[in-house]
Image (tube, helix red, strand yellow):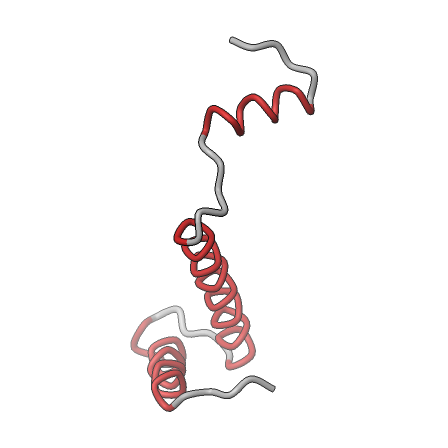
Length: 78
């Protein structure tokens, strides 16, 4: 199991509090709130991974992507 920092726990607690409060009108069940948190964390991790790829120059420019995509899918150039 990954190590969880105190700030992550505090962030999770704040998130749950806002999601479970009846004053928000559309409060979630605890299970729904945890599922929403997991989806949110997965999205944030995907963004972090993408930014790391950009920082380490593991990307290709749009023209190269376009060329490879068209070649792979036998599409004509525009």
